[in-house]
Image 1: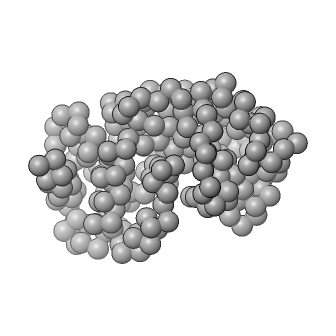
Image 2 (image 1 turned 120 degrees about the vertical axis):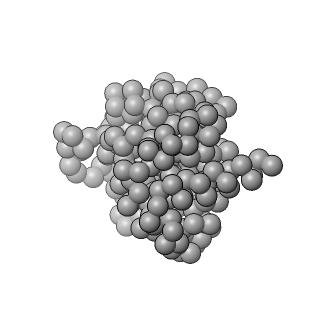
Length: 234
């Protein structure tokens, strides 16, 4: 057995799936203690994919695994939207967010097993079981879902939908709404269609917005985000 921090076993297994280790000294990220970070080598210029494996924040010896994806330009815009429209406490969270390896859109790998509840007990951080779990889950369950999200079009389809494991309920709603709007503009999706994608999730993202106009109107928020995006490009 070997520690994840230098786990050649998991490195080799994930490399066979197209993920290479990223050198980082990050101590804590998104509830992962001392994360080992892996970046998809087959990413496009538009979208990057990541895997994170480390210890739990409370119980460091128990493993936590997450996956995430980002489009750098869309990611940056969504962070700015979160700071502008979200509760002031989001500023403290963003200050701790590592923009080199982090993805605002990140999800627990266990979510891929929710339908069958396959993983019921924590896995030790230093174990072959962890390597097997991460690599088989990534291969059999994660890649079939995210492999098409390597372009603006694929990422838009994924974020605008609401399916496991990438549901709106476990997302940063304001940032996700901003990403859907931005990707929609990049793809020339009609404004009315963008608002239609956001409407079912309005209650989730608007509850963290102090502005009463945004809380009361999907259209108002869409228009504000479009204005911000267009102003950014002028």
